[in-house]
Length: 278
Image (tube, rainbow, N blue to C red; front, top):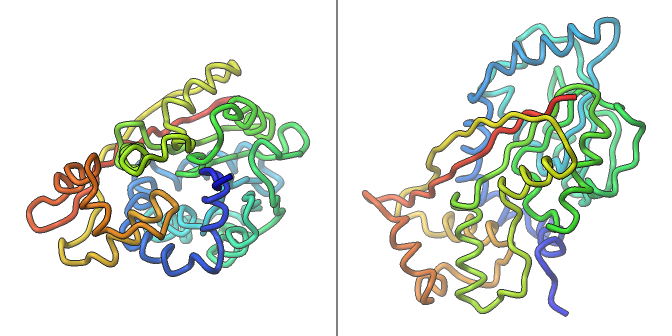
């Protein structure tokens, strides 16, 4: 049986997938800049630290990837010079490669602490073990049947406010993958979970939450085809299908042509910013 979405995702979060990952982030790093600029994270973290005065904040990064979000907070939200006390930063990911990459990317006030080499739905920890739990562009490969149970573990782990950033179904990440699976007759594969799926899962477990959203474009000059190819391959966790093949395949060619405007590739993103309350 061919590997499904979750298995292919894990396989690509590996040393063998590093080149593809780096090409992906030449475009996708803007996602984390927009998240870093979406709220006043300095004040938010100071408020959370004040609520637990006398000890360090405990934070869990779910599906931590390569640590792009905490790095973006340092670069774009001036977290590093906010006068924050050290924050114990726990890392959760099913891929050991990701945990090691994220750990190497952390800088003060984030101090590496506990590691969980597991899926979110497999997380075992005491109730309220963390003051903050966040998952930023992290839950796409979570199987739909396990969404509610995964979010239950998320809420169980969080004593304070949680945060999830996740693309809606009309955003490039979701739309492109669905078109790809249809165009290449791979409709038996599991589509990425959408923000709508996350919201439905939170409703199913009775969580209290609020939603904002941001819309933006990421992209590259039209002639940077190798970068765009790596980005699109990473969007589907498949480095065997070339950009030329994608552009020549009915059902996908029109979408990719529409992404080329004004001498550049432009991929529209619409992202839910979900705050989850205790």
